[in-house]
Length: 235
Image (cartoon, one colour):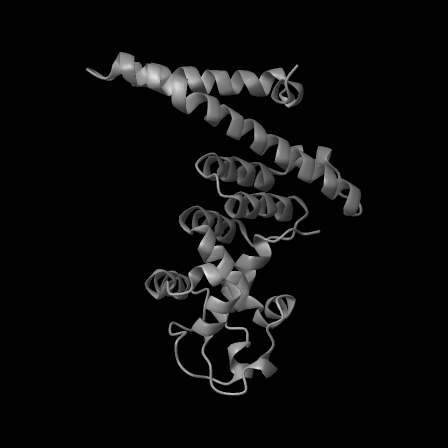
């Protein structure tokens, strides 16, 4: 028995099979592209899609069990009556299946776990945050987290304000913390502009000269902080 078969209950596997059949039938019904397109779906798309769905369901289930062990009075069985939780899971599932990046899937799982334990904003804000997880790239999430807590995250890499006795910039901080972004100003400027436009950052320009202590000041807004809490594990 394979690892996947071991963890998939019949009902869940049946749902995946039904979804597979429906999509394949829909593709087959399209004039001129039915047969080859349906075969392509079966050979190329369906196997990894099913695998991704199985892995996602297993990760969520394991995370909920971990919550049960760590959070006092939390019981997984009580979630069946939590309509807000069910809606969040369904919405997050759709986003998770479309994404393979670890950071985005972790953000979605943490959103589910926060709703499960009641550490969450109102339902409309949740819906907006789930939409942003879907729209943002993994780099949006990484950069937002850095600018929310640059002092602590920087210290973990030996980066401290005292090192910058002369004027520096937040872009310098960003490139030193993420060396892979060195020289990628056009790329990360778009991300910073996105985060600012969505109300997550209180600044748009990260290139102005500031003091070393200024470089390590938090620049996220309360809205941005709320989003980061929503996508961070409650435990």
